[in-house]
Image 1 (cartoon, rainbow over the protein chains, first blue to last red):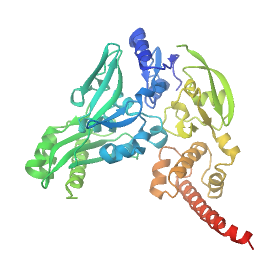
Image 2 (image 1 turned 180 degrees about the vertical axis):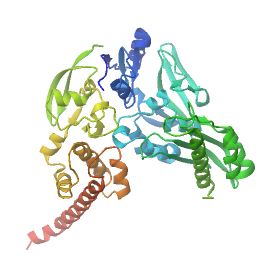
Image 3 (image 1 turned 90 degrees about the horizontal axis):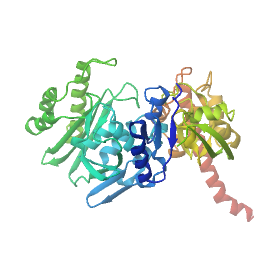
Image 4 (image 1 turned 135 degrees about the vertical axis):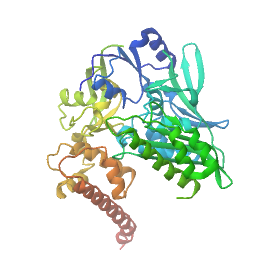
Length: 281
Length: 176
């Protein structure tokens, strides 16, 4: 329960941080809010040689809208997402998800960039980013690139962020005036990691839903886009979507619950969230 | 980029300095170097909430912040919050309502409750339960804790209303 010996640096600029990562290679580990990383250190599940603390980098913070895109700095804390009028107004999916992330003291430190870069398959914000078609701004010593959410989550705790790179911002296209979203999760205790969660984003299309993105979390090795269920909504409504979901997710048995239980819970959650989104609940 | 660093921060209102190992979490620094044993360590991985303290005005887990990260920050522990009297009413309500038995969770519980009440003057019982859900209590079963926090909210609201009435009455009385 005590972290292993480690070196620490708090760079004052992003370039300095990138130079440290380049110099120390795989031994270097960026430190964001620390709410998962320090846990891993304390439990000795991680033993980096150098922690590169990103908490002194003002260029990684802030939430702003420009050119149809909302840019959220990677070091924006969950608490700041919850307090942002821009997020509340323009990104209600994220506003609905944040209260489900752990507990107040964790939300005071934890960051959106840290959550996304860690890519815990049961975490809320990676699923929201995927549902919202976010783009991830990744900086390396040689420059900046953007990766679409569909190409970003590669597996269990695995993302498109390469060695020596830092996630600097999340860019989310501003949903239109006809946008509609839904979020819910099932956990044994509020604030625990979800057994199953669902982040949904779409737009009102007559009496139905168009451009629907249903992203489940806690059901696989990464957030899972349920394409079959989304397509079935348009064709046959909520019941059809629940039936189609079987082709989208295949949760494994684990120490918490059996895969079949998770599958059932996902079906229930889909009914609830779609019901609310279509006003059928 | 050292394994040990010198840091300076404000601890319960006083400027302090320390030489810390990067691997040391803030909870251990406060307990071992400064003797602030009101920072209770339970799980040391952010789950139990016993070590919850205040850093730059916000409740944080002392076990999930490295001591070196406190450099330049304002850190407040239960000792400082007690001495300032800021949460005396909350502590009194915990006492009166029997909202503690062994007391191990109490410092973290109080910091969490203080933040909730600062942000939500009249939280619902459900909101209180949600807020303290991140702080494990294995004695009282939470009921008395929720009672104490709800009672403090009511007392503070009543006191604010009274102060407002007094402020509007006083000038007239003074003129008599």
